[in-house]
Image (cartoon, rainbow, N blue to C red; front, top):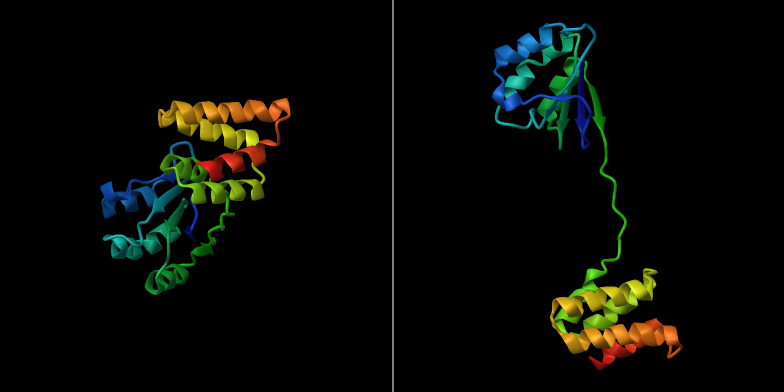
Length: 182
């Protein structure tokens, strides 16, 4: 059985096809497993490689095999698709999942490192909109100040954190004020 999967990894024994000759592949396809049963062999990027034509020529051997051969490819060209369908392969195209935008806290640290008031303030506003906790952002900023070896900046950030817990104001507002006075 042959299966072609576009876009995702499959579990099975991954063949190092670059190191195998055509004869070894034919022998592997026609030999039963040591303890019986069928095996699944995965060949990643084989059809779109330099040896792609060689694999297309062996598709009939793979189709007659008791084992399952899975070709995992980023994309299938028309010639390979036609050759696979001709021997009865199952073709599965998996679309890549879109990743959701996730806020990057390190933009705050980067702007602080450059001592860029505007971008620091913008990064703080973005972090609040993303739902970040002010304590986490203050900790990140204090870490960056220590990394910069700026003792006065680090002390100022730590005192802002403690002042907010003493009732001197909300930490979000104190950090915003700090960014604008930088």
